[in-house]
Image 1: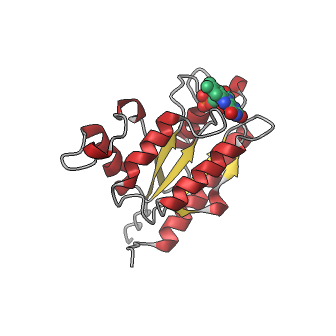
Image 2 (image 1 turned 45 degrees about the vertical axis):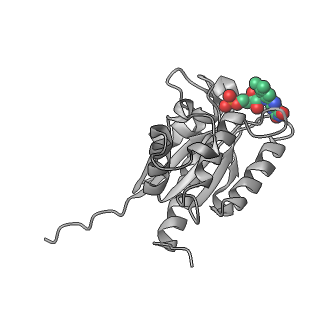
Image 3 (image 1 turned 135 degrees about the vertical axis):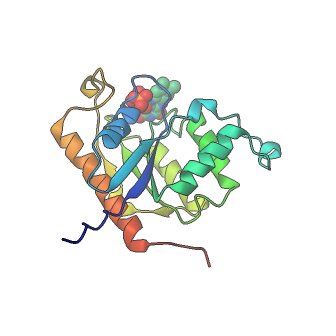
Length: 193
Ligand SMILES: Cc1cc2nc3c(=O)[nH]c(=O)nc-3n(C[C@H](O)[C@H](O)[C@H](O)COP(=O)(O)O)c2cc1C
């Protein structure tokens, strides 16, 4: 009997824009990493607190170790999924700092990227997401619109394990990973012209 073919694995890097311990945005991504679809590995990036303040003078070899680590993780991922709150009508400064560190390297160029929006506010954090789209377009990420989704996560839904138990939230975030992974796999290896 022939050996079963190995399942192709897609690696998706999950980046939360919030540093808050009980963050709803991080909880949604943690839920994704705990329950990925078949053939998908989803890793929640845990290094945002260790990134230095962005300074173009430091954006050269040898890079600060935390920045080199961030870029290596982006490079190793087939796709990136972000989830961010809105602070004062814009992206949180710490998350924008991370995005600024991504500008100087080639890792985000052409990388399939999607966002999930966990906001439960009436405005749905629209200004942060408009800003996010501007940044992603500017750094030439490949925005996978069909994988982007609004999945509201009220604070009461975050359990003690830091994940969301709600079945519909789990189903939808799994679907987002599946769409993003399929897009990345279908596109295959991509190099800029
Ligand atoms: C300093 C600060 C500014 C905020 N500004 C906004 C805002 O402009 N628009 C909005 O919809 N929510 C705003 N919020 C609410 C957060 O987006 C909301 O609490 C969100 O759940 C935080 O995400 P987290 O649960 O992942 O930490 C603000 C919160 C803080 C702490």
